[in-house]
Every structure is written in C-alpha cells, then in structure tokens.
Length: 85
Image 1: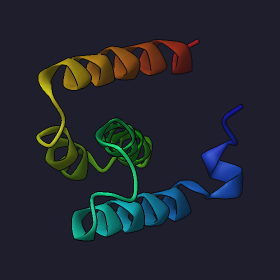
Image 2: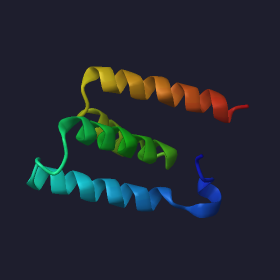
Image 3: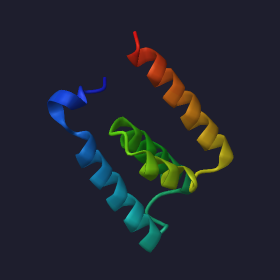
C-alpha cells in the first residue's frame, strides 16, 4: 500500500535512501546483483516522478536498459490513469 505523500512526506526520504544505495554500489558493485541495481534505479525514477522531478526522472531513465524504460513508461501511464479516477 502506498502512503499518501501529501500526508506522510516519505518520498524524499526514499529518494535519499535509493541514492545512498546507488552510491555504495558504484563504489563496490559486489554489494548486490545488477538486477537489484536496476530495480533501485527504477524505484528511484518512480519516486522522482511522484514528486514531479521530471529532469531527475530523465537522468535516471538514461541509466536503465530500453526494456526497463518501456516498463517505467507503462507504469507511469497506469498511475496517471488510476489517479484520474
């Protein structure tokens, strides 16, 4: 379940946590596997999108493989459609 950002303001904290994990991975890529790294990038892009930080989203998407970028775009469209209900 996603906590409402307007009430809990946790997305900024998540962004900081994701960025820390990415920084650690860049220093030592043995701390987790490449699939986990890609998932963290994906989740970071979602967090940036949630806060409407589109420049940061684009920066992260350039680091993902094309298939993951497509998955992110589909996810974003689904979220947009859901939020309009």
